[in-house]
Length: 495
Image 1 (cartoon, one colour):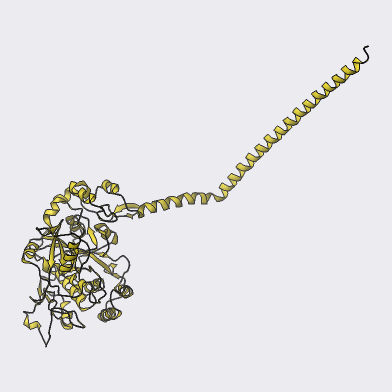
Image 2 (image 1 turned 60 degrees about the horizontal axis):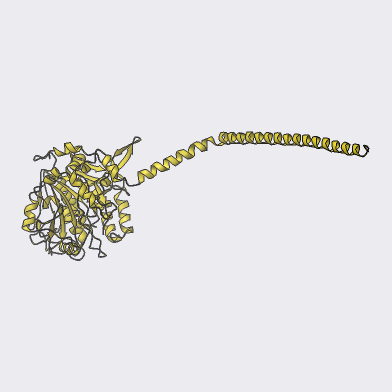
């Protein structure tokens, strides 16, 4: 009875033992797998770390250079962008923002862009960022006295202007008309300056005698008695000009209330500009003002060339409008400002494409009085010589090749060097801003410059260096860098 049961138990035990052995073996296999995986993981981490170390050792210079280059590019982009008004408020030199009246100018900035910007223009000097135009602090400007020099120590004491009443200067059968005649721009306004008179005008004497516009009482450029009376009250003048439709009148900003009481802002218009501005609802008030500008309407302009007409208030002013007519040129800078403002001691000419944005007395102090200069003008930003400028004028179709060739040929004949430096500065200047004291010597200079512009092309930047070189005795001239010019104005461009 028991024999069948034993084999059954024996078999059951055998199976049980076999299961334990397999389980142990499986556990050992799993343990080995885990050890292999762990070993492989450590080996991978070690290899990866070693590869990183080798990469760093091999390319460490590049890893240092790339972040430095990125930082440099970031800083360059900050320099290139236009600073915000918040930046301007931080600057202690931007005195305009401190005055409540200036805030209205800022709030009127509806067109965006450059208009009404007050932020300073800066540059890097010796690794330090500095403002280009260093004005006096606001408190000092409030109490700044205007120096008046009645006795002039220069070689020229007096300037006599030739007119049609001077019969000793009228020779031959010369007939002059109100407008220019074919082949010449001399007329009743300019008088007819002969080449001999031109040569004598450059000879410095205690009393200089030369043509300087307003040759005849019937020569045009008529101003009302009321405007003329106002102009005779001005001791310091900021002036601009827009003839032939011209540019919009940009309101000056950045001046203090004290300066407004001492400085005249005068804008010259002709009847064409007056009509164009009135069509845009820009009307002159009963007090003859638009904003801060006293607008003087000039009638019966002496030149068909509006740029020549503009030189009258600029010397006599700078180009306001370009015309396809070769006679519509560049006489709109105030070269003859001393003849329009006979009582003025100082003047600042501002091109009509620009918005003047600094305190005029601060500008006079920074550019004239601080350096004992009598005239200040910007260096040219793109070119360095008259001969380079001549090529650019032809290339940009601002004068005919024949006109330019006549002028350059004469300058070469007179010995004007082709050097790119004149008296230690660039030999070419940019005349959109002219700051000067009205002295006999600077008045002589402006008359000489005007006569060159009438005789040759009206591109006054070609003739300015020539006159400076020929006159020789005008040494107290401040030819300031381009970044100062950019700080003085917001450039809007010509219309």
